Image (cartoon, rainbow, N blue to C red; front, top):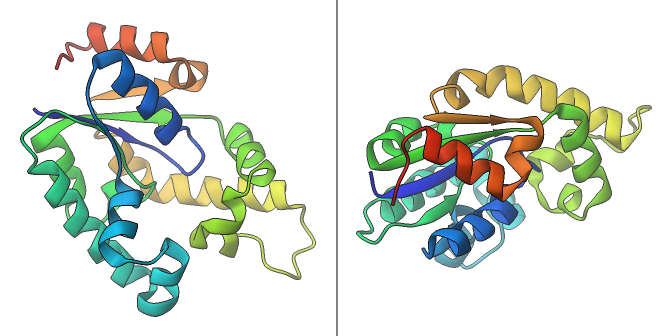
Length: 184
C-alpha cells in the first residue's frame, strides 16, 4: 500500500485535510480533481458540459490509475464520486489506504452553501434548481442525503472511517490512522 486516499462527500474537507496530512507525513499531496483538470486542459464544469458525467467519470478513472501507479507514497484527495465508478474502490484499496471522512450532512450543506464551491461543482450546482422553493442549504442537505445513500456501500469499504469532528482535526486523524495500523 503506497498511498493515503481521502474519500467522502463534497465539502468533507478532503483537500484541506489532505494538505495537512501530507505536511505531517512529509509526503507529496495530490488533488485528483486537479490532475483531471491539468490533463483535460479545462475545468470540471467544462468537462461536464462537453462530455457529460460519463466522460468525466472515465477521465477520473484514468487519472486515478495514473496516480495509483506512481511509486512515491502520496496523500491523495479524491473526488466525492471517485470510489463509486469503474471499480475505482478496488484500485484505492489495492494501492493504498482509503479513509472515509464521514462529516454530518448539515455541516456539509452549510460548507457548500457558504462557499464558492456550490457554484463550481456541476453535481452540487444541479442539486438546487433556479426555481427551487427550498433554501440552498436545505436543497444541498437533501441532495447530500440522497448522494450518501447511493455512495455509502462504496465509502464503507474504506480501511478507516473518521466520523464527525474526528474527520476535521488532523491530529485526530493521525491518531486514528496509527491505531488502524497505517504507516508510510
